[in-house]
Length: 245
Image 1 (cartoon, rainbow, N blue to C red):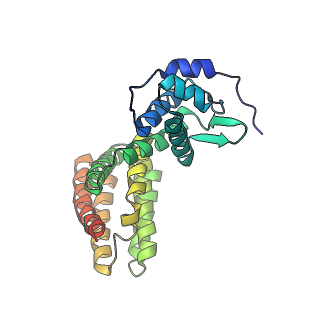
Image 2: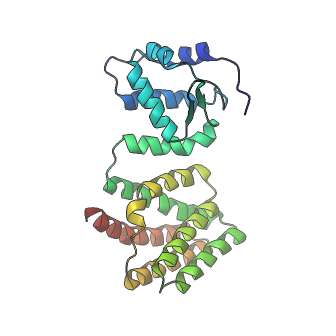
Image 3: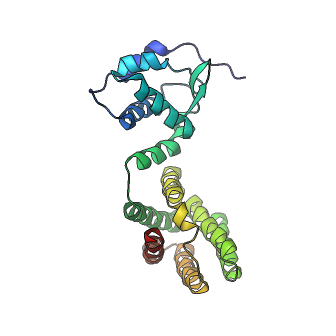
């Protein structure tokens, strides 16, 4: 069992400050997240008891309890009955979960998520064209060839498609950008899993991915961004149609 840092309840509560009356649970969670991702609390630190947090934030204990329960589901804190609540990871490790939480409690629509995904994917393609190394781009090309070989198996095609985008993200060389994109992809996954549901759709997707790869391989950021924009328009239209079903 890991050893935990000393009791820092007083420091943590002092850093939180109070919230206005009637503050919703989502805002309680936001305030806690701001503190947890600020880098001042070490992983494994035991948090103050619910009663102390509620008193400091000037909210009911139930609001604190619900906020901590939500953060536990997201993997940000570890609630140990009879022991306390502990911070799980470092600020950088918690960032992807923080992004996911922010999108979820913001009640973003599928249309907004698709727009966000398109913008991020287009920028990833631009960066990959400008920065991608030959080894990284070789992985992108290998994923494209797997897509080409999987036109008769849509499940295999979808896996190769996702691998293509992941490899492109690595070639872009911006971990924060890729973290945000992965969060958006995961929120759209219920639709993305069935986005390519015919041989014709797979062939169109293959052509679009091929155009992106050719531009990235040529080191042409503008062409790569344009090719990805075309692909995102097609993919977003399919996802929107599935979401409406």
